[in-house]
Length: 251
Image (cartoon, rainbow, N blue to C red; front, side, top):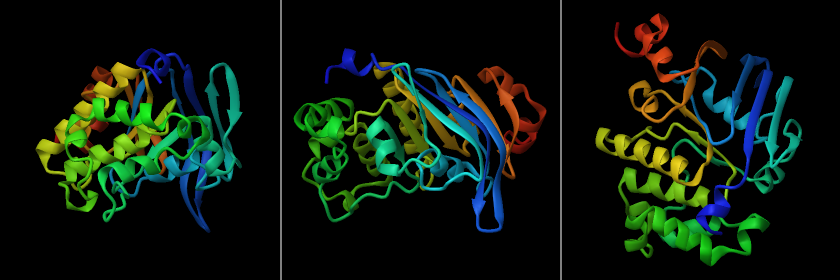
């Protein structure tokens, strides 16, 4: 698929009044947010506040007890609540999970090929692989290296490239900075921003590193104890908010 073809797919996400949890423990409380086409939205919050649970709800891994999750893809609305995860992936919605979740004893290329399992990607494996190696030249140099022998930053590149092998329309990224040295955090965030701009991806990124996340976010939401406490329509609004200053900026 050419770069122009990748950029032509309109994709957005509308989450409204979502409640979810595990057993008797409620984690999300009436969460509502929108991710517009070709926008990067940051979901900011410290560990244990519900970021990953929301990602799992979008992917069908956790079923909300209330609310709706609608993905609009090329003008068609899809209700994701109750839809199996494999069908959500088939629609073009892909998750880069926290901790990368690679196969350490497989090579870089083998890990990438495992990302090309949905029908739309399976028929274009060679083109998609070339696309990923263009986006991540370092991986092209190390395509035969075992993923488990790479640095944390390089493994994050593999995880992002594996997600791109699915030819996503909506990309969910859960805690990309976790476990990385500061220099790799900066490079990873820069790469996400570069990919979004270059290929017009629609991105929802859960992140606790506020200073890095707002470098590439168009807007953001702060989640506290499963509830969205602040909606920042711009980076400036996020940076100037008193709660954000207290929680993230040491004010």
